[in-house]
Length: 361
Length: 167
Image (cartoon, rainbow over all chains, first blue to last red; front, side, top):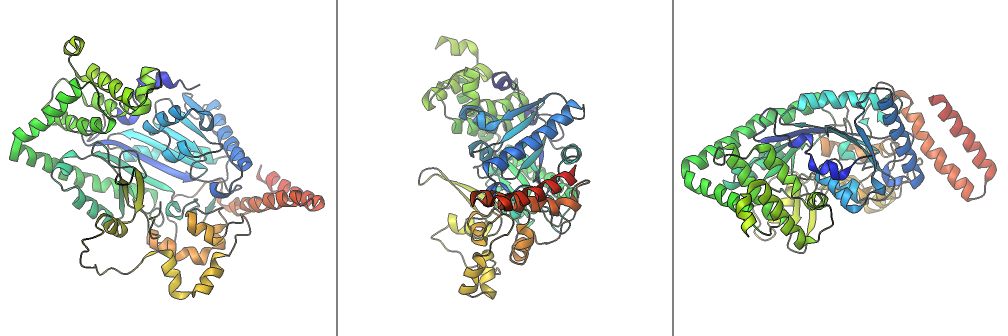
């Protein structure tokens, strides 16, 4: 059984704040979309079809685990049985998608205990395998997901055609079914208003840009996910290379923007960072939106050496732990929006603030 | 994910806070229009690729288009109109049954129409036959509903044969 309350106290793999270029590249991620050939895609699947798909894929993964071919630290979670809060919690940890959380019907997720991969069953496709790494590490993510895909496929016939590759519910995923992405923290490009220019050039080379929580979310805390737009006509290695190749360019832009901010107005930048830090460590009630906004400045401040005594993994953790479901899990009770704002401020003071000052209030 | 206003891939994801919170998924061009509804810039000289519907409209009359929309996949029973509305296909066979209609869409989205890259080690060859199970199961369900039990039992035997060959 997956213990959600215990899990809430840990950080997932993608928040460890280690790995190459992890000051800007928060995480690397690859997902593969697959479907079982003998069942309709989700749009035409009956409840019985969904249950069968879940059973076949679940059994295959459990067989691999008991055969010692997958690590035994795996958790099988029946998502349809979960409370809304627990589903939201998994979305915040990026272990399931928002669509997977909100849809109806038989569905599940297999979660690796180290949160280096998760396998969603009955999302938009029957199978969505994803592998996560901290920092810029797409190559190892690809090797890992490729092996995992091979294992699952041993006893499952995937929908596949020689001409079109892996057949997916949406034609935008057909071919490799692969979405290769990196999550970047780009606060200086946002401050210097160059981010739109960067997006436009990325779109010209067929790369998509999304906010922190994947498809259809606004960019929160200046986190942007860059991923391949096309899935057909390029191999998985080519897609990985395409995304990998653009990262050094973006890192260079962001670092230049940071240098520019320091050179042009170090006081203004330092002031911005210090005020953000000041609010986060003293506020008595604070929204999620404001928290993300201010944490972004603090994260940059830590990377630039303007804030000491705070580590990047701590800041990374705060981004997720101050989200609504995490806060409620950590508090051990359901909280409404205004109580959450108070709980959030308390949590932030405990991690960033001076306990003595907070205690006197 | 497709653009909500045409059939190109949505590359811009906007959270609209003006009229309550709603999310909009658009391609670059539609997003530009969405964000700058009044101050219209000089129209860019871009080929009007505005979506599958328009593409089809070039070669099809409205009547032919309506007929096309009514085409139904014999395996899963989805109509082309349903696909166009929800942007999701119903089964693997749709890629074969609607191949002609999907080709321009795939080229529009991906710039290519042929897969390059990984192939399954074990699947592949029998995937086509497996797909037929979708049709057979659906027909069996319909036969049972129509109380055509003889037909249903024939279908069940066919299903068993394919399922048995898999192991």
